[in-house]
Length: 216
Image 1 (cartoon, rainbow, N blue to C red):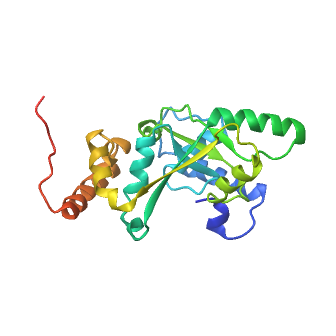
Image 2: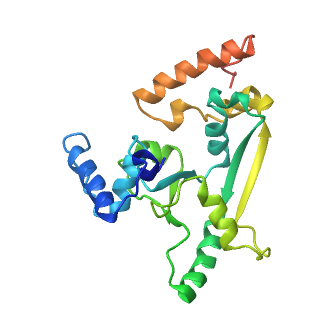
């Protein structure tokens, strides 16, 4: 969720800077002693994984991790299908470089890859981000990319994969066999707690014995 949605009001650059500064100050005494970020995007990336409202949108380099997050939420069971989006970083970046050189306009989207080893969640999830102006909501990024490259069908920049919601339990059990669970993606007490909660819910949903271990 972007900061604009949170505040439900126009956000100036000063407000954005103040929001980030407040987060950095609030982090004192709550992070590792070696945490010395010099880039603002590193702070945004850290905050994104701990509930801070940021201009970032979560992505992952693994389509299977993306599938896990698409299916783990039970609240989406009312929908007919789940969607997984894929984006080509290199093709989009090359295309945007050409557009920006010609128009000197605000980037449609910017990719952010954190190099910090402090965010174990980000590392475990193969995470990276797209960063957009605060005036653009998360759900508008797809439409803006489509509009920007409208008429250019030579390269695939964005794909959408849909899977019927009826496959949720099968997908989650298949992903578990690949060690894609909250226990692996969130290597902390929160991940352990949610993993156990999910196990209870999944066993109740399937209504039968689940094979949890195999002989080596």
